[in-house]
Length: 286
Image (cartoon, rainbow, N blue to C red; front, side, top):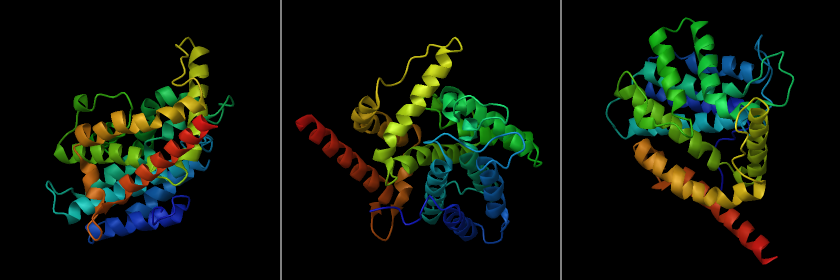
């Protein structure tokens, strides 16, 4: 069981998002999706004049594509369900930019030769907002639009108080909550999510070492990869589910496929967690 779109394939994700966009806005800017995908992918692949290619191994380009696919699917199905308020084309555009840019805080500048971008884990949301500001201002977006994108990006912060975030209106708030939902569900539904947890641990460990070397607390989130894996089912039950249900208003329900009545993202996550539980039980019995 896996998602129907291969998130290792940039063009496959781009095409699916473009189809969603065209379906929702048939009279809209038909080149928008292709244009912003190309420009953001260039940044991740090292074609930005000031930044290197992404070298964080968990928060890589595919991680961004996983969230982007989930975000686009959610907003399309929300529109098809007749939910109100109806999101305007501009709101969808700003939301798409936000999900594509939400982890650009892991990118290292050209002169930064120490470690990987994972060292910026603790500050990556603010760095992503700064990157988005420069990226969007260079392309003629207004201050209001830039602030909207930054507010949406802030929805992805693990410790952020979602209720304290300021949005210009209900549409922007919904797009931000959809982005936060997609960021969490997109990665946890990935077929290789269990296998990538040790890589996620290494990112946390690098960030802790980086902060310690600069006067920060240096405390690692987990003592080992094994601890992270062991605590992941609880992370789902006690953090992710309450967050998507309460903070993000249950928008994940729009991911249900009306043809089957199933939420593929939740099904895939549950399958991954069952796999982890079997792995943990086998290790305990060994």
